[in-house]
Every structure is written in structure tokens, then in C-alpha cells.
Length: 322
Image 1 (tube, rainbow, N blue to C red):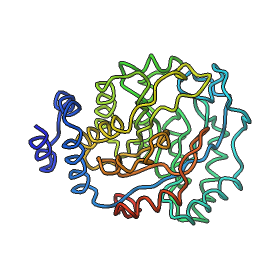
Image 2: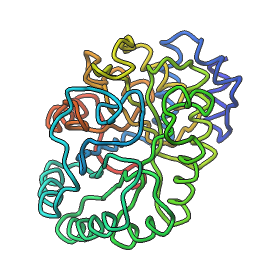
Image 3: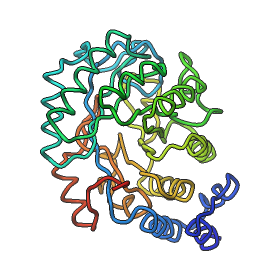
């Protein structure tokens, strides 16, 4: 079954939901080896590496149950601040560019940035693009098409807005905005001429069916960058007692995602440091991208460590579309 579906994908075909569910039950070694073969065919040895900066921290009105920045939960997340200055954002962009990072994403807390905040960050993006060669991605919440057009003109190239999980399971994760809100945000970004990046978190209590349905939605929307976050159970959040998923489960999930969107950047994101090998096994199971450095409120893996790891397993850090 694995061989049959692999050959179909290699020939340019697609697998459906039922077939993806069958793959999810397949022997792990055979599944991950097939996914890696698909990855090599469609993406070669390129590895897409990005970093993020917490551009606006804390006091978030949304009730996402995994998040340390929500005002609904008592967590150890302290030091909330408003939008960072252009000087600070440019400084960090330069630092990341000098380390060979390809993309630099500015991420802000809250449901959405205001028009005033969008104008301010547009100035920051113009300065980043003028002073560095790094690509700028933005994760500013549920913005409008007009706001995305401003960001595009300023020099942003990609919008991040995670679906998080399936439409079925999303109400168990967040009640202050809807799955449809996220889909409309991604569509607005595409209409504005921006690339989109959208994945989710595994370990929320969802099923493999939910993960597959999330990626099928992303596939329908034309998403080619799929972040895969491993839940880091934050004390004080409703998910603080969720068990951390195993490395094998992470690899199985990434492999199935590779079958579903064979030419995508399957991007290991938050929680990668919770697996002992820093993602090495997963990078041989279909994943070919990562967020490096610190996450929003938790420590990550340094860029230098990642660069050495990727060199040792034969990857070349460059954009998948180069």
C-alpha cells in the first residue's frame, strides 16, 4: 500500500483522506522512508530555515488553550510589551541574516494589529528590506485584505496564520475566533499577493484524522509551508497536563503530511527541543524546514546548532523555490 501510494505521488497524483488514514497506520520505517523519497524528488536537499521574533508580547484577548500569552490564564509569561521599535526589529533581522537564516518572521500577540500598528510595522519592514537580504514574514492575526496589501507593498513576502487543527476540533482549542476567520484571513493574504504559511499543533488531544483534515484544508488553500508544532504543555494553561508526544509520533505525522503535499516545506516549529535528537529523525521522515532559535515564550534550538545538524545530514540551507 505504501509503495502504491508513493508511486502515485511521485507521478504527480494525490492521495485522499481515506488513503492518508491508512498510511497513518502503516509500519513507521517503511512510511518514513517513502516520505523521504518523496521529499527528495520534489524538494531535493534544500532546507528552508526561518526564525521568529516576538514583536508584541502578552495581554492577548484570545483564549487559545495552549498559549502562555492569553489573558485568560495565569502563566509564568511576564514582561508584556507593545510593538517593538523599528530599530530593534532591524537589529534582530541583521543578526539572523548574518547567520544564514532565510526568513525572518515578526509575530505579534492579540487577535489582530490595529491600522496604526500595521502602518508602524510597515516602516520596520521597509527598513529591514533596505538593510538586509532576509525575507520578511508576518504573523499579525486576522487582518484584512487592505492591511495585507500595505504589508506587501512594504516588502513582506509571506503571511503566517496557523489553522492549528481541524475545523471539527478547533472549538475545543479556541472560542474567541473561528476556523472560518482563519480561512478568510489566509484567502485575504493570497488575494493581496502574499504567500501563506499555515499548519498547526499536535498533542492538543486531537486525533490523526484531525491532523489530516487540517492539512487537506491547507492543500485546498494552496499552502506550501506547513509548520508542525509539538505541544509544549505550559503550566497555567488548560493543556498543562497533556502528555508530550513521542518523536515517533512526530515523524509519523510529518511523513503523512509529506504524502499529502509533496512539494511543501514541512516545517518543524515549536516544541522541537522536546525531542532528544532536535528533529534529526524527522528531517529524514519527510520534514525539510524548521523554525530555529527561540520561540515566542519558550527556548528553542540555536541557529548554529541547527546549521551543524543540517550539514551533517546532507541538507543545504536555501529556499525551496530557488
